[in-house]
Image (cartoon, rainbow, N blue to C red; front, side):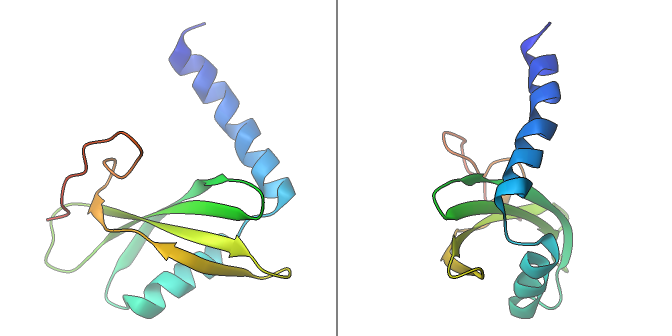
Length: 107
């Protein structure tokens, strides 16, 4: 089995595990993002990475006047059964917002 196929088979299991342990709800993340950026359109909210009461969520979006899809990472902290943002990263071109990636500006 290739690495790609192993990753494809493993990701759903990791996502299910993360959901079972609790994550901020996708709807809540989208609502908070759109509250700050009402003219944007959210295209995807990816499963986050983290642990120990915190998670980083990848938010992909399109904004008026930009041709490319953009991405930003928000950090959420589990605070007494309620998730609160503690980090809002700098936006970049979708797919370039990760550790070790060469971040490209969203334009």
